[in-house]
Structures are given as C-alpha cells and as structure tokens.
Length: 184
Image 1 (cartoon, helix red, strand yellow):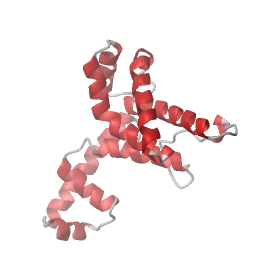
Image 2 (cartoon, rainbow, N blue to C red):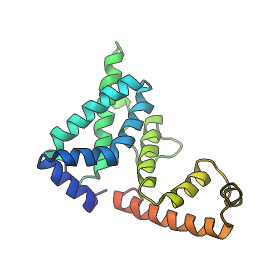
Image 3 (cartoon, rainbow, N blue to C red):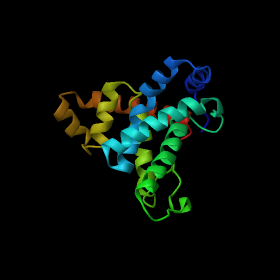
C-alpha cells in the first residue's frame, strides 16, 4: 500500500511546515476521517474534538510519516482509530485491552468488525470522491441504492448505453485508484 506521488508531494509539504499543505490534507481526507470518527464515537461533539486532535497529530507527526508503509489516508485513519480508542477508553471506567479491538482491515468481509467495515466504507467514499461526478453518481445508485442499470436509466433519463459505458469507465478509474492505494 505505498503512497501515491500526490501523497508523497503532500507529505513533503507537511514536513516543510507549509500551512497550505494542512489545508490540502484537510480538504482531501478530512471528510473520511471525520466520518469514521462519527461512526465510531456516535457523538458529534466528541468526533469534532477527536478530529481536531487527529489534525494536530498529523501536523506534528508529518516528519515521521513513511510513504513506503502506506497512503496518507491510511495513515490518517490509523491515527484517527487510535484517538477514537483513547476517547472510548476515557468514557469507560473499566479497562479496555487494545488487543480486543480489531485492527483496521483492508479486505473487509462478513467477518470484519464493525469498525473495520466503517473504515473500509470511508476509504471507498474517499476513492469515489476522486472520480468524475457523472460516473460516481451512477456507481452510487448501483451499489448503494442497489438499482439495476435499467432502473438507473429510468431514474436519470440517460440512455441505457450511456449508463453502461459510464459505469465501466467509473469502475476502471476506481480500480486504478484502489491499485494506487494498495487496496486491490
């Protein structure tokens, strides 16, 4: 799961202390990180507080980010997971053994813990956000709304052939992004 060239450039800018790099980081990954925190913590105020801690930690730890170990989004979500665990521990009076909390899983699957499945959904949402909107919308209708291509054509008013070709292009782009992230 090595980082993309774009991740490497952004990491270099973060290391250099460029405030614009943190803004770019926030724009690219903030939604995925915050969404993950909302899912795990289930309280907006707590998610906002932990999100701020994650962004501060990203800024502080940028010099230690190793692009050969993973993408920036994976690194950020790993930090978010750790801070979310800290927040959950703070809420619970009884000790919580970190070994009892499953590690983030790229593969997902039926046996994955809910946190792993949420992490996978946020990674996918991040990837989908990078493909053209007309392709993304059709893929979302197909896979999230579970509409058939014929139903999508009826709902959008687009010809069935257009639906099919855009979905193929969207899936190809998505596969390429997943390959770049090491998720394929």
